[in-house]
Structures are given as structure tokens and as C-alpha cells.
Image (cartoon, one colour):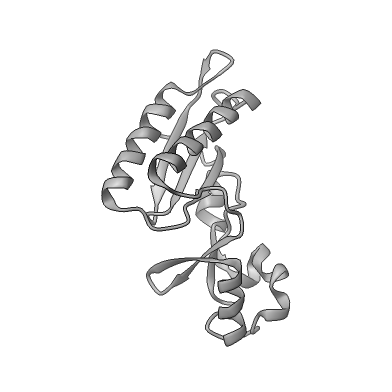
Length: 162
């Protein structure tokens, strides 16, 4: 589906890497959901995708039809279903993902702090800013150095500013 860069997005980070089978099954659920997703009887121009085997991203082109509280609730219900079916946690906002070369590492806040304390990570480490809210931001501001993300202010006392 061709979806505008101004589309609204929601990013759900899994607490672990998905297997290829899980990824395929979840993608099918996303496809089924987005093809039928509506707000007040209007079909939403929506898209669901999985990136790096751990991020589930829902997009809605609100220039076509806007998401409403009820329609957003339906998407949250879908995520809860996925959590239960695949034994995942998609709502732990204290999990942090960062790049280690080509790998995407997913860890707890405590583990992230420990890595900063040891100097294994620094201000140039690429982190995933799951707070971005549009497709354009997904392309430009999702993967950013710690120093350019909210992580930089939260962990300022732990960061080696290179």
C-alpha cells in the first residue's frame, strides 16, 4: 500500500526477537486487521509491518480518514491479542533498542545503563526512538544517535560524550 509520509504511526517493541514463523503469523494478523480497520464506518488507509524482527509498526494515512479513540482502542486490543498468542510484551516502555553494528539489541533500562557505565555505549550509539509519530519521522528520526534522542537527556549522567 502506498501510504503518505505524513501518516500517523504507532511503534510496539517486542521484548525479544521474533522467529521467522512468528513474524509471518503476526504479519498475517496485521494484514487482516489493517484491511478491515475502520473509524466510524470509514475504512482507514492503514498498513502494518514488522521491522528488525522485533518492532511492530502500524500506520494510518489520516489524510484519507482519521483514526479515532475507538479505532485506536481496536489496534491496542490487537496488540494485546498478539502479546497473549506469542508470549510477548509489547507495552514495556522501559525496554531500549540500540544498534551494535548491523545487529539490533533489545535490553532493559538497567542493562542499558550498565552498558553506558562501562563505556560499551556512548553518545554516538544508534538508538531507536519509538516516540516518533509519523512515517516521515520513522525515516528520519527513528534511528538516531543517543545524543539526538530523548535517551540523551534521560541518561545524560551516564553518557560518554564523544
